[in-house]
Image: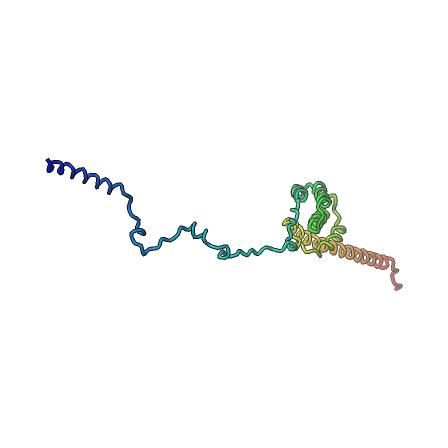
Length: 210
């Protein structure tokens, strides 16, 4: 009877031992080897640092007094560009009105130069009712001294400025040719009068006595 009980008890004990081995958690390596020291987590490392160990950040910010926070207003080219379009369509009166209105509304050296050149250009067009080359030449003489590139004028204004220079040079040549033509006409008239007097003297001269 004892042998039979021992035979029945052995499998039960063996089964319990196997179940205990399976249920037991694995032993970590750090616990198995006592000479290995576990590293602390990054969060714990940051928590253990003192405030003196953190490097200071240096920001190169401008001084409050040297900061120019004001923004320049953008130029309003509405009436100037309307004048350009009217000029391309041959509507010289409308173009002049737009240029003059732009000159009144925009007060800056750039706008003064842009409007002045546009108005002088219209005054140089023979088909315009504002045609007056003498006034255009007089006003452009002052406008030409201003640096259009430095003032960053409108691109069309720079083209118009160069065209205005060419027109004024051509007008100067025309005026010179007209002056020469008047002089030639006076010389021709004087010569015709001299020839007429000489012819009259020749016809009225009495024949010599034989």
